[in-house]
Length: 242
Ligand SMILES: CC(C)(COP(=O)(O)OP(=O)(O)OC[C@H]1O[C@@H](n2cnc3c(N)ncnc32)[C@H](O)[C@@H]1OP(=O)(O)O)[C@@H](O)C(=O)NCCC(=O)NCCS
Image 1 (cartoon, rainbow, N blue to C red):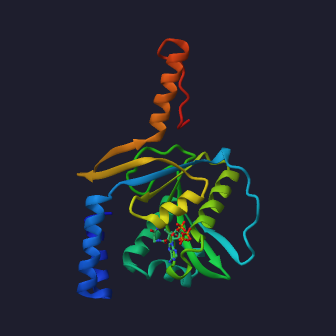
Image 2: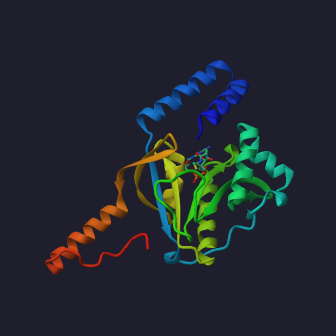
Image 3: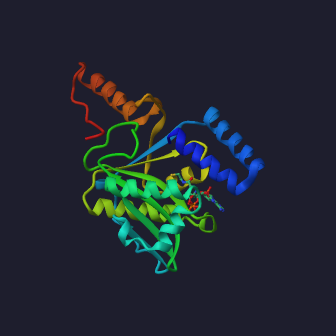
């Protein structure tokens, strides 16, 4: 997130919640930046996904939107009004322009949560490049009164199956290491952990530091095994990103 949008978010938070709450929120953000700033990255191999075993319960509905014009004003209001509305509206416009899909989960026709997917590219510089058929999951949100009811899991799992049926290759998602609700939600889905990493963008250059990259470690392990088996280096190592 850019400095200007962080300041704008802080200003809106201050106007809504007052000085005391803002100082507390700022302290929490600083502690997270200092002590738990890693992201946990997840992936899902879509062709390997088994087909869904059941339909969605009849009270639940998932909608996919690929442009702003078919979003109802009510839904648009709900997804943009709970934090900085101006910035949130800009984000919605920018994402649709990039070709992203907005997925909304509704319980008895009421919006319970939403999330975005973007194919072949990412909104911001990412930890690694995506392939043309790879899909990024981003900004999943469940409204407070619907939390703890597995809405996020239902929505993410439903999207994974839809993308698999469309022939997409891999899905990637991420959650901050402090975000226990998001991590435990990911753990229930077919997503698997890829590793932990940090990312910094300075003067438009993005630097990525991996604390653990399970794909690379798996490759090294395969390499060791193939050297042990063949007695020589250079045997073909399957590319996990292929
Ligand atoms: C992260 C988030 C999407 C999870 O949505 P959710 O539908 O509540 O997820 P689940 O119902 O699967 O719950 C996930 C975990 O959080 C717990 N939880 C989260 N909010 C809760 C609440 N209000 N009441 C009870 N439990 C809650 C659940 O018990 C569960 O933990 P468990 O697996 O140990 O039981 C939601 O908390 C949210 O929108 N948070 C703010 C935005 C965010 O952080 N998004 C993710 C980053 S992209």
